[in-house]
Length: 118
Length: 168
Length: 197
Image (cartoon, rainbow over the protein chains, first blue to last red):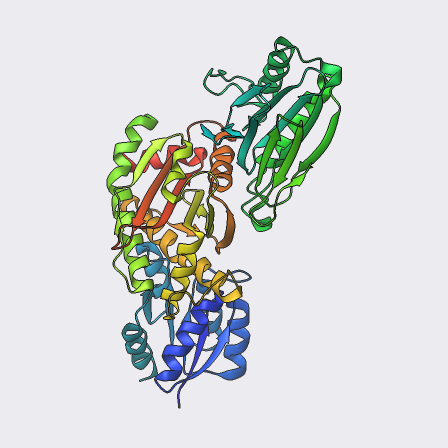
């Protein structure tokens, strides 16, 4: 069963994402910020990551880069309120495989995760 | 803006406004003081009450608009004291209380929001300049305050969104 | 470009911002939310608070500070009962389940502000070809006027002009579903004028 790391500083978003994913049969690990995301990625080696951008301690774009240093094949999709053209470009350039703008519907999230895991 | 009941008239003292009253039915109110500072003044012998709602610390280089006579701490306090004197209040009898100057956007944003602190400092400074002793102060913190002065008794009350009115 | 000319130049950006923000609100709550044409003006009056019910109204909402090519403030406010309703909608619960701002409710409202506020900021960024970074949201539970005047006073105290944009959202029953306030720092008006020209 695929394991997904959900990274977001909002408890509400972590809860919402976890619900969508566990109901679809995925295992979910959570992190509250970029720093924790990097630690948990190395410890748990999830199949994919859903990463928020705006977080305290370490933002999602920096965490994306750190994770890809450790694992160049890391499958990371950004899930963020920051739908700005320049930011999408930077995320993709830094190795993000997908970019979802909040509030992302359940279908969109599941489609993105399915693509990441295959 | 005034709301009227048989017993009391609540007179809203908006941003940059000041109001005086001798009518015991009146309650002068400054609603939702965030970074703003409310100054209540009461002369217990002349029975004159006044409330000013200050927005900014200094009028330096700025025009003072008649429509917002208490906008700035310095010119606002000067005018407040002048109007009180004209109404028969005597400075050394004045009971002056102050409330407000908070940082309501949260402690995390305190760096970005210094205006509450600056207002508190400015009114304290100006009152001191006029030789006025402040009888009670409820300044700073992170909560907005509503300040009211009851002309019937000369008492000042402060309340927040979370707590009921208590006497200042 | 004088600040008076900046206002019409910002109008179409602000309108798109309000549409994106409204879509964000609708998506999160599974309800149709309509948006009034954003009101952009120099300075502000207490009547920004009328949209949420007046001076003494206690609101729940979030505040974001903006950094990047432009700096400023974004705030999304709801009258308290409406905020709690929003939480129920967002969590797929019976309306009335949330009776007070507990931890999860505050997180939900915080995130609501993040999504709606960022949607507006995204419009500014894309139209004006900028990169803008909203801060993590700060949840607010306070008298509306205290919040609005604090932003107004802080911006005003930095000198120069205060440009405030507000957009009121309404649900299908015509009840106010939220008030979004966006205020650039005066130091950023120059940058805004250059890109909006």
